[in-house]
Image (cartoon, rainbow, N blue to C red):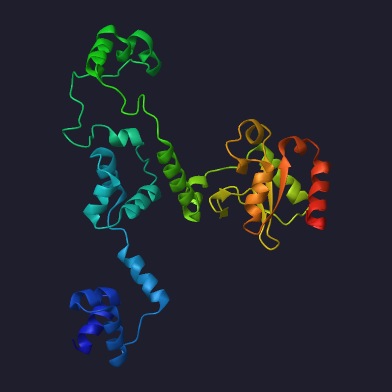
Length: 301
């Protein structure tokens, strides 16, 4: 590669450093270093812009463009290929000549993805003139007597593998231990509860905490789990927890002692946390809840 070749390609043919690098199969930085070595000046920004405008200079007349697009029904992409320009350039030409572009249905008319997907003449779609709501009742195939008989014959003699079976106490304990181990993994808890949203009682509690500037964060979506148990609200610095209990689920539907107020307090106390339980019925009196929280924070009860 000699100086004369670089000067000819760069200044006379107006090629960029990248294009020259492609011709000689070298990197662009190599061309840039050679130009510095041979003291070949680089084009200014305005000169580069002018060169680009010259390259994009229109080389077809309005009449020819009208003939190709309107009479021969060529697309803007096909016109761009003929003149060696981009599709955007051909669209810009159409706009500058005030040639009205075809609508999408007109453009797609007569065009199909392939012969295989082309809808054959004389054929009709299987769901033509069928309303989706008409498939109920007698028009639903699964409701026909003959279809139901066939289904019944095929399913005859089969039974669900778990039917009539119960887990042994040993199996129940094993499954319980596995679930506890899974919930001890914060990633597992976060994955399960990632779409969990606060219920009405928790939303009410969030409003009370925000309005009274209590330094508690909502972690009921699995952000913080202690030994497999998900919390409602926590203050990390003081290691305090606020739990919101529903009257129904924590009285009538209690499955074990840890679901009770005393059981929950004892469980978290073993992990070094102080717990306050707010009951659903208490949330009806907001001022009473605020006083209860303030007294708990001040006295450490």
